[in-house]
Image (cartoon, rainbow, N blue to C red; front, side):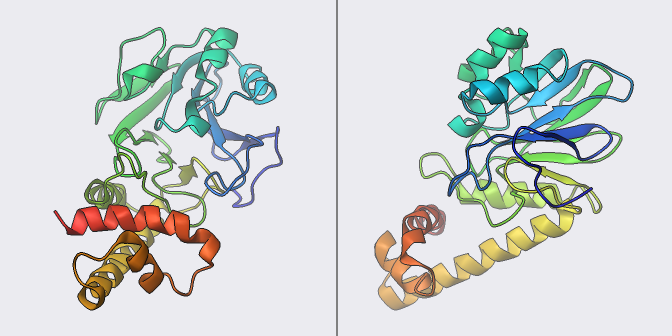
Length: 261
């Protein structure tokens, strides 16, 4: 295993079951691009695909050419993970399972927490991990113990919670659920490089969130409990490049919602 990203358009084997193809859609929120994960049991031809990505024809064709697609799974609703669904289904005929019904294709099945999906020699446990978005879901590959975390945990940096349906209370609970899976599990994230130990990464994420919450609480004590999002950002993120303040505002808004309940 390596923590360096593959070049675009190249399939890189990360674990005996999981390989990744990086989409060429880099950006502030996507890091180097979206990771499309391809799962295949040893000795099998068919694959399970997680997050086909954006509507990038070349990327979707490359994934479709890896092998017959028995099933496609979606970690969450954001367009950099879902925009290419219809074209991908057109290329492969794959059913698509997602928490949000608008992304399901050729099946009515959602992703209930704890379900064991047994497909083409694979056993994939559904672990609902809301917080980044309401529908965020992780997948535990049974047998080898690696975990596909979507945007709940990234390969580098920290996750921004969606301002429309992100929830910090849910997110903190999701991090604790990932910690409870135990040590030594490989992180297979939606963006950024794979990481060797999910438990330690989730613990670091949790500590970071709790530290930021303490800073926001302290800011409210100084500024007053009716302080605006912008005032809190200026107080807490004074040492951060102002270009990143719009992203910080999104995080602070979620934190204030959590603290003001």
